[in-house]
Image (cartoon, rainbow, N blue to C red; front, top):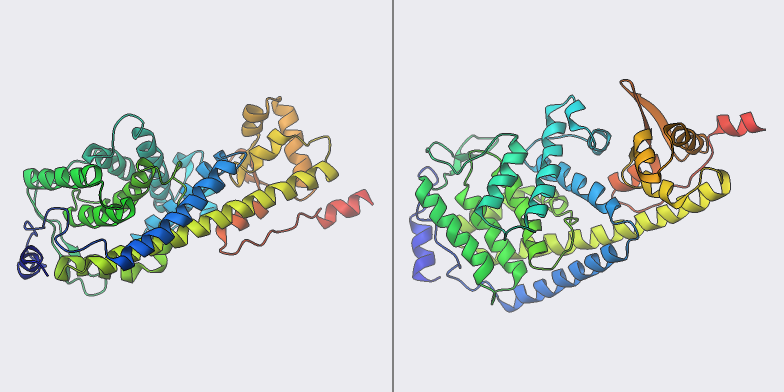
Length: 387
């Protein structure tokens, strides 16, 4: 280990602010042969995801669904637990959500969108993180100005890390973080993402919301580097399944300078979740084709390509969605949705005074790990009524 790396390990004390957090780039070798091979695998998986996204006739389906899955998993990493059904139910009107966890997870989705849009105006930077964290927390967040922030083990309450303190110091370290992202172009962008994610979490610039903000920044960096076109990588799926390793490896970088293990972890996360998302996109396309054929055969008067697009925008559909996207009257929209419910494509249910139409086969596909397509069937009661 280099002298810089050795100094960082020897001066670390979990209960004292880590003001000596080394600047980037790391002192050690972060582009070993093994890491570069893992980069190739991850890049291949991302390229396949990017192509699958480009071939999707209606990319809105991804924008409206995958970020919600990402929001749920990333929030669960921070012990903010909700369900996919709850999130999709209130996705279009999060103010109506009763549970605080649901509202907070949906704010993550909004923060991801806002960060994505911000890339059109400015490069990824400290201000981006402020915007993202402020949306997640629903208050204006600022770079920490006072000490007192420390991270503790959930079970033992033992302090495991105390981040740097002092606004000027934090801003200096964030400026270095920005330069590493944009100027160290000789380092593979996936390795830069992994290193930058560690550094952001170690700086811990906010009093709360750092983990979720950092995970959104990962996706934004992949988009900025041209490895993704849309924020549709379900990266937190891997992290929630390997959460103890996530925190252990972050801490191992701090305590021991073990960069390679951490970078391998993040590259594996990218490769696995990119492949998962690609397979999910292909399954969505299959279910959509199945739905078109089934509706065309069983409810030909209701069928239109636009109507099928509506019910695949997200699993819960409202009459107004059909009015807006298909261009029909409210009465016609209600009739078409009822026809789809009659043949078993949708289930109608009440949410207060509003009627919602759930697309169960679509919700099941999004919520499950397998990509088995659920066949559409006319409910027994309707078959008997028509007999």
